[in-house]
Image (cartoon, rainbow, N blue to C red):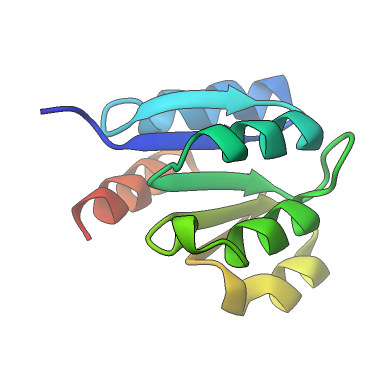
Length: 119
């Protein structure tokens, strides 16, 4: 049986590595570090889970979120918003499954990802 697929959209190499390490037991993982490439990949794949940073080079995470929410292909895709921008996180809370403010507790992320895989 194949694992579900997680797309991590995060420009910080430290956070990108941490997030991928935390979810790779439950998911096949791909990381993307800029907004433009994230949109390219989202035209090609339909992840089960997206971990999305808001502040990305190229195209901001908010526009990526708008794209995902407007496309029926992603109706079952779960979204974890990862950001240090508390104000924007509050504005977007109703459009994502979970909001995590940085710094993020790695074990908490692992538990959340595991739970989302089962839902």
